[in-house]
Image: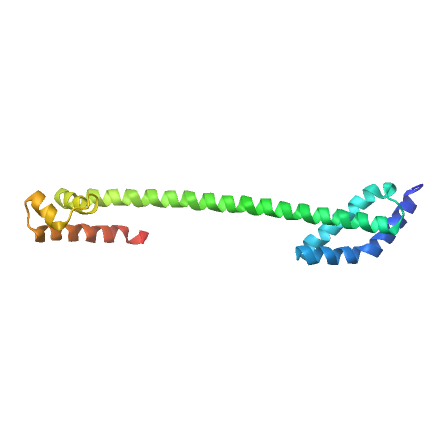
Length: 168
């Protein structure tokens, strides 16, 4: 191009001729007006930067614009996928950390509840829940009646229900 005036006129004519068609294509693919407009604008910026190197043949210019726009749409899609992946990783990490924190708090509350029980009640409850012994086996081991075992287990369950109600 000999002058910027000719370049501007040529560009303006190409913009007027192809903008609507390129926008419609872009919008059909990305389904968001502002993104479609941005991608078409980027395609025209690329055209402006290279207008002197492009053949004046209309098919060549149209092909060039379509190729640029398709590449811009692909780049945008990749960028969105990367952003989505990072957002999902962040959410997963946040959920994981929150879950760990919740489990830590729950474990502290369980430990506090055990500490608040009478030693004999805590011991009998641990034999039942941690070791999996039956009431009969605990009664035999501790040389107490099954009713006494049931009483200790009931006390422990009440204490756990009261202390842990916020966790369930």
